[in-house]
Amino acid sequence: MRLVSLTVLFALTATAGACVRVNVGSPRGTSAAITAGDLQTRLTAFAHDTTMGREAGTIWNERATDYVAAQFQRLGLQPAGENGTYFQTVPNIRPRDTTMIRGLARNVIAVIPGSDPALRGEYVSITAHNDHLGFTHRPVDHDSLRAFNAVIRPLGADSPPHAPSADETARIRVILDSLRKVHTPRLDSIYNGADDDGSGTVALIELAEAFMKGGAKPRRSILFVSHTGEEKGLRGSAWYTDHATVPIDSIVAEIDVDMIGRGSVSDIKAGGPTYLEVVGSRRLSKEFGDWFEAVNAKEPTPFVFDYEYDVPGHPEQYYCRADHYSYARYGIPSISLSRGAHRDYHQLTDEPQYIDYPDYARLTQMVFDGALYVANADHRPRLDAPKPTDPHVPCKQ
Ligand SMILES: [Zn+2]
Image (cartoon, rainbow, N blue to C red; front, side, top):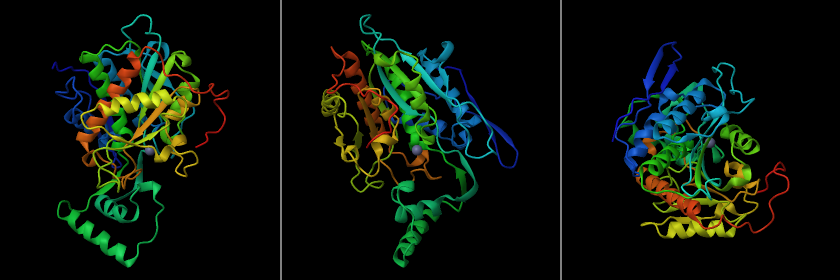
């Protein structure tokens, strides 16, 4: 494969005031095939400490969107944002903290035109979010936090914290002692968001590469949308669907990937290589949900679709907490795929070295096959009920 010299520079302003520039823009040796190695190469760059946690509204999220756009451009995708660019600026997104350097909050939008002139004006959308939580001025010891959360907060920020009992303290100690054999204490202050949603963002780029360099010629167009501001309340996807850069009704389906890099048995009790949380896929179109199940069933090692979090009224509210909802509210059949929460969810410890790359690659392949199936179907997924009349009513799990 040809090495391309297009690069993106990330500047890191460290607390000491030093300025370091790191080139993360030219993944070497990525291939047309969706592979664990390609995903690891890209995610290690995208979720690197120098990207400073990519908080929407800061310069670091702006640079993360530069990176995504540069990758789309390098792969030959067409820009589908505003004014002939890959970007759509989302207004009024501010950093949490006035010490952060402000930057543009942008969605990144690109398209692979369909091969069938009659269907090219219809889009299958694949989405993920490029932002995360930034960094903190109060660093903590990385391994102490991991050991604590392994016992006390197995779902990270989704587990309510409590003071450890004597027994729990002893278990934390055992875990920490084993971690200390590998590393001396090291302070951590950056929310890398490797899984959330570095995994989805990098999957988008890997999928784009697979479509552009592989032999698949989807009949409908494939629309890639990298949303900003998800962590601030689905802001980027809400803005995109309210101000879509293609006619909103021409989006025939949407596939959102958010936190698709974990899910092994060490992360989730019910986890394992086939663990997959599926939300939303049958709510508007049973046919769309059936198609995805049929595609998955044909994979060499199919995932087991777990619809627990899709149940109406479920207290975790996943149906309303992922970007797919912004599409569903416009009557677009949409599916939210995730390998689940874990001890590092919204923690300083969500880093690339804890990702389960082989299963992440299998899931990315399944998304490719699902998107291709919908793109080539002889009709768009049929809605079972009339479209929602008002996309701005509050979401109901
Ligand atoms: Zn998140």
